[in-house]
Length: 474
Image 1 (tube, rainbow, N blue to C red):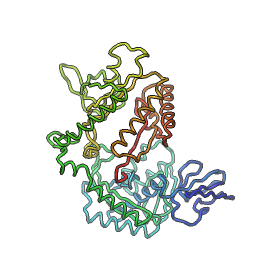
Image 2: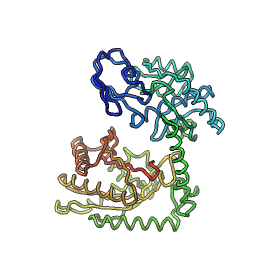
Image 3: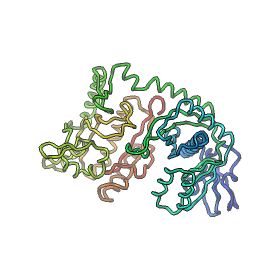
Image 4: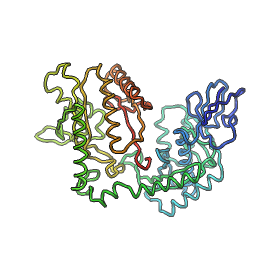
C-alpha cells in the first residue's frame, strides 16, 4: 500500500492489517488526518489490509484545518462542561476561520470572566494530551447514553438520523456525538484563543431556544495565532460598518428595519460612479438595459418555482384588490417575461438583458451584517437567451467579464467553484447535464483552476461561484 505525505513523499508499506495509520508514519505532529481510498478518517484508523491508498494531510490543507478546528471545538465544549456542568451542549463545527460551539445556558450568557476561564481550561485540556477515541454505537444505545447525561439536543439530533449505527468521540470524561474525523489527541492543538460570544437560536429557528455561541481560533504555532490576531485588529479598523458611519456613507435605522440600507449623499455618489462604470461596460459587451417592477403576482412566483423552492427566503405576501402579490427576491422571472413579450427568431440570439435590480430577501436578524448580509439590496443581474450551441461561448464571455469587473476593484485572489444540481430542483436531468458540462468547459477554456461543489447549485440551474478574498485575506 502507498501512503502519500503532505510534502509529496510516498511511502510503500506492507503488512498493514490491524495497524493504525499513525503507526506507519514518521513521528510528527504535523500529520493531522488522512483519507483512505478517498474517505476521510482519523489517523488512529485501523487498517483492514485491503486498502490501496492513504493520503495524509497537514494544517496547510482544507481537510487538515477543518479537522484541527473541529477538534478544537470539542476541546471548547469539554472546557465548558467541566466549568459549568449544568450547561447543555448542541453543535460545534469548524468554520472558514476557526470554530464555534453553541451552548444552552438556560437563558444566561457568558461573561468576559467566564470566557477567560474557559480559555484557560482549554489550555489545561490541551496539556493533558487526551486521546480522542471513536466509538460506533447502535442508535438506541447512543440515545440512552446521552439521555443518561442529560444532553437533550444530542437526543433530538439522533432521533432524526436514519442510520442504525452512529459514531461518538470520547476525550477523557467528555463524550460528543460526531462523524469525525478528529486529531489523535488534544495535545496536537498548540495555540488557541477564544474570540467572542454571541446569541444564536437552536437550528437557526427564532421560535426555538436561545443559545450562547462561543467562537474560537487555533493554530499549530503561536506565531500563526499572533499574526491572525494582528489581522483581526486591522479588520476592526477597516470594518465597513465603522467606516460607513465615520465617512457618512450609509446608515441603518430601526424605524426602517434591520438589513435595509439608507444611502447618504456621499455613499450615493460613490454608488452612482460604480453604476455608471457597470452600465458602460455592459453596453460595450452587447447587454441591453431593462427595468422591472419590485412586486409580482403570486402566479408569477408559482410558475417560476420560487414559492415551492424559495418561499422561506421571501417576504410575506400582500393583498391588493383581492389579488395576492409578493415583493421580488429575484429579477429572473421578469427578464424572462420581457423576452417572451414578442416572437423571436434564432437570428436575434444571443439576447443579453442587464439590470441593476433591487430585490428583497428575508434573512434572519441574527445573520444580518452591515452591507454584507442585508434584506434589501441592488443586484448586478443579467440574463442571456441563446441557442444550446451558443451556451459555452456565452459562459466564457460572462466569466471573463466577471473577472474583469472584480479585478477592476482590486480583487485578484479568488477561488472558482462549479456548483451542481441540489436535491430540490426543477428541470430535466438532460438539461442539468448539458448546462453543467457547459460551465465546466467554459472554466477550462479560460485555463482557470476550479473545484466541484456537489449539490451547491440553485434550484433552477448549476452555477459558477467566484469566491473572492479581501485585502486582509478573508
